[in-house]
Length: 195
Image (cartoon, rainbow, N blue to C red; front, side, top):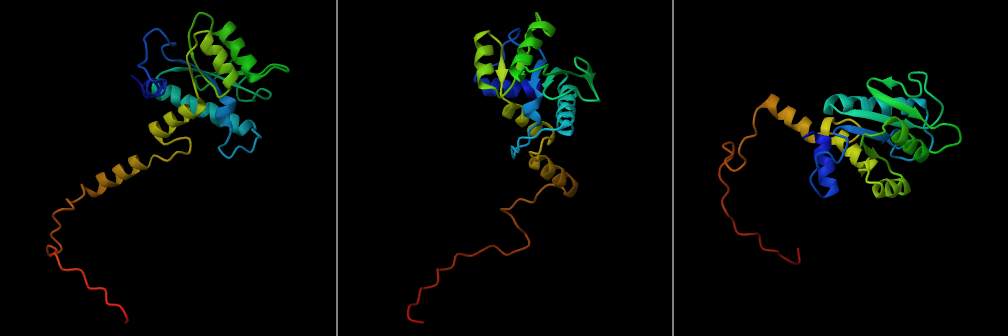
């Protein structure tokens, strides 16, 4: 079970059921993934490419297939429906919305397959759940990046501390510190008032 499957089962509140999801196929709202956490609103081509590259690393690490939907005009790095580093990319067409494009990709491009859809759009999420599609939030996907490799700005502090410990050797037992004499219990100093 991959890290992504483990997180999915934890956040879904039940174990992953074989055959229920796409067996490693994820349709991601990459536009929301590209949004910075400070929510300034503007997402440019650089942020979109970075989001696709992040998904590419996830796909490679977890051995899953990822399809991304992004807004804006097509990037020069990848055309509509083409793959960039193993991630197929679709752009919102015309005056449509991301939700419309996600549903179009589900209906036309991924027909007969059951991907997990990762989005923050609550209305789309509710509609997809009614149709029997497994969904997950972008925040959960970010946790996968943070817990899996330290990518995505989360800081994998535990991993760095463990690497440092391996270089220095194990920590000494704090109960038996040979560099100081054993502490003897002393009575607490009396609080003297008036001085």
